[in-house]
Image 1 (cartoon, helix red, strand yellow):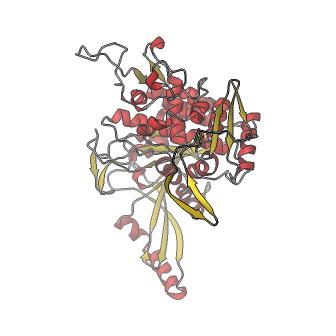
Image 2 (tube, helix red, strand yellow):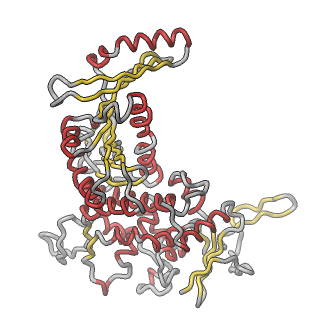
Image 3 (cartoon, rainbow, N blue to C red):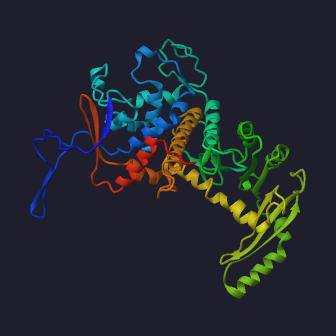
Length: 492
């Protein structure tokens, strides 16, 4: 079936409702009448970009390969790849909940994005499903709720009831895929890379498995761990919150670093994180593995005493100028009990309107490799953009905090879906949007300007006509992005 993107020469005639909705209104000298008679009109015309992007990159297809489908092929209408595409594309388009898909299943535009031969669902087996080309929430939740230990048996454990949830995920394959997509995005081997670690709160509103109260966030939450390299997501691991922020970070980093070095054996790796990751286990592992690090270091009386002269100096400068003052210094330091050796510490003595603001970082880098002020301002403070802003994209734009199922393993799978949706939009931004005004746009902005496009879908015998809004303000940019994806003109 061909897919043609073109304005209709003449508007299609629809059967109007018998009566207009609402009370008649006046607009100047005309009567204002509105009806639900527009036919198949979608607000997600930009799904065309997701369709073409997936055809070029196969990101979702490779993600689907991390699942095993035990359903009988002759008894299903929605293959595994279609279900996963529908879920990932739905997140990218702004639909966070499975319940949304009970209405989305009627949208022929999303069906076109999934390459459905019957985008209006007119040939569905059951009469009650006709007009609904896509899967509903009851089918999609089988992606999330299949027990990890399911082995393909037709019956539920210790029961005569048939098992309906038969799609099993392999988390290790997804973890490996995230790393593979990262290094595949580089045409040339980089000399150096920076891996950023960060933990964040994922507030819970129910009695989910693994629910604990966290004193710092003052709420019940999960404490997921993220690893980024620039904009590239390498790890998203859901964890309980009754742990230290750095818990299991070595175990998560070991396979990531091994896989990167397998591909790029000579690359130099720098690990960066806030004070929550300044732990002996992680620093000692970095030193054994030849990995440099920069970590925030929580202040304490011993550290502040070390920079007392500098604190007095910047306070005096502030009193004289009434402008913030700062001085950097460095020294070697070790804790009394927990550290196995002395390490280089960079100190920032600063005085602001609110008073003294001392800060410390610890690093394996020597002063010859990076001076104190440069290391703090350019090395450590850069983590404000990555990973912090990238995590905000995950949670605010792609619903990574929508962890409302009862089981922790199914909430981890939801986090994976959000992660793949992020990778998909990040790939669009890095490739087809390079050199445009959206090359640094967040996922929510990309969705608003390129994906949420009004349009009419008309299915004929030989063609599917997609007529996007003539008033769409970013039509030229949309056309250029689609052309870039069609031609495979990717930047890196």
